[in-house]
Length: 253
Image 1 (cartoon, rainbow, N blue to C red):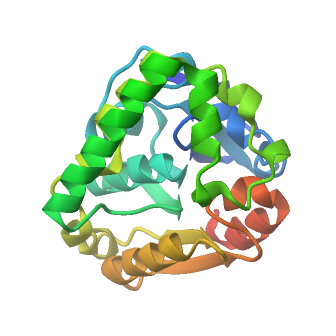
Image 2 (image 1 turned 45 degrees about the horizontal axis):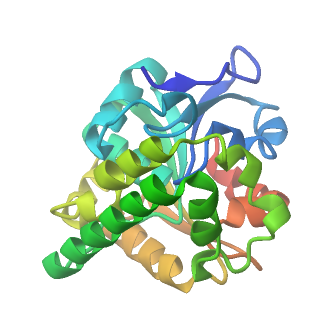
């Protein structure tokens, strides 16, 4: 069973489920929880291979299925890997979705060769973390250009160190972007037809995911909107929690 922290917020508050990115845990959302819990019932999940769910090996679809029943209906807020889980959940279990907020997310890689290359790269990363351990892997992971604008003080490295090498390796192999084969772009209009409200979020300086976000919203249709968090990169919710909350607040019930 997936680990879910005890809910925070008023008993009658609208359910809000927070899904973290790769190498994080549900604790990564803690800086935002006090504000979110003022009027929402907030649930923080440790995704497979991470935190209290380190021993679980599930792909994106199975993770979505494991969450939909116990925690839905809810608004699902997912970042990066968590955004992929949230998107899969909305596609497979729309009855469990009252709203969707996707942060730095994608519906996959179009080119089969690119997907194969991504799977190979993730396999190499999995072997690296198994060989070198979590600390050395985090040095490499957080040094990526993707996180160039993320202040080390906000990266939550200590919480990330609670993960295991085996868990992170399994997550890369089962839930990496290359596993989205075929990609999900052609499925997106179903969300619009189902009337699912979707907010797609990216940091101002995260050019790649701003473009992917625009494509996500275009594919979903009129129920989707895009939001930019000024002055931030990929981890926009960590870099500027207040700016992030101001940007996504209107999307939350």
